[in-house]
Image 1 (cartoon, one colour):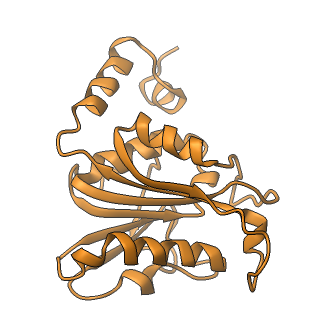
Image 2: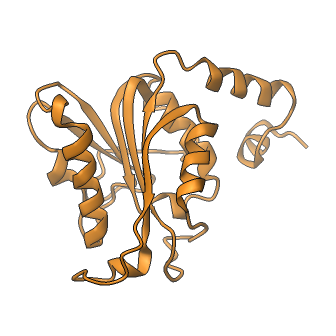
Length: 206
């Protein structure tokens, strides 16, 4: 967990959750496995409830997701805040995971996603993508979330670690009160047969 990532997530908390500090929020952290730090200290405060989600069991993981594209352990409209940092570049079909983020968010719920726009390959176990601001915005539009803030950190120096190497992109988005557009789009994808690769495999569609 590099310095700039913690700074961006702290900024999200202080700017977008300041009026919710006395509300009983359920905050889910996707890709929470603690390799060299985690966001838990930022969000573990009463009456908030922090949950770490990852595909592997380990430190700072409360719920193990058997499938990164189908979170059977989480109900729709059950999460107030979804956060994720340095995870989406390791997800092969990240747009399917983003659909799950949208599904589990309550109406009006918030998400903050952080992913690098630069930096060397770091396989864990794979390293597939880099993200720019426009890409983050497009992803949120695809899953029907309203973008509240999006930016890419271009500060190359001044960090105590290698944060300048990664130049993180950050997006903050909100679930719509009536997310019909997303449901309509999902329905069309199925009806038209435009199933993406993991769904094709699961349904055995040739």
